[in-house]
Length: 145
Image 1 (cartoon, rainbow, N blue to C red):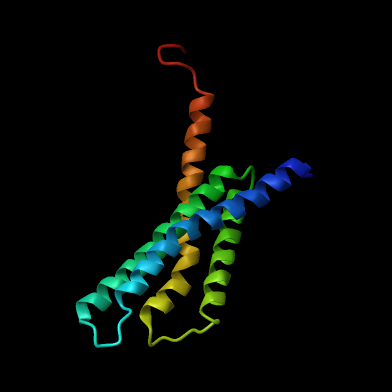
Image 2: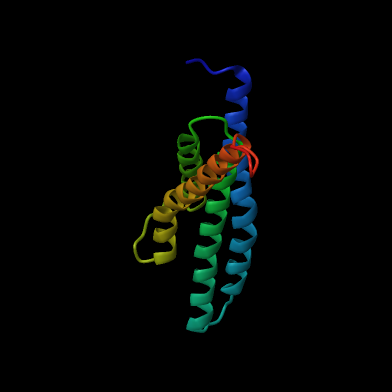
């Protein structure tokens, strides 16, 4: 089973597009959450909780969208491309945080451990949508046998 060059390029670009879509969603939300807690003085606990929740929610939403669009663009072996997208996003997140893994900061730990499952949830949704579109394409119109 050989891949034509066109499919290889499309699959590579599907991973790149998924990562870019995830980053387009994650970065502005992360900047906003960071600005919420940027202060020289003490912050109210509620503001810290809102910032952490916003950061985790933004990462989850970006990862789900990135996995979904990766699968929608890829040609074959959709789950593998979603997995690769998750690994790339996890690597980029680790690179930004200098590969620190500290359990004292729950938002950082949840983000490390949650990126790959979130991307795979988006990939699973994309696979379901892709199968639904394909089955509707080959079904007969209503009223015909």
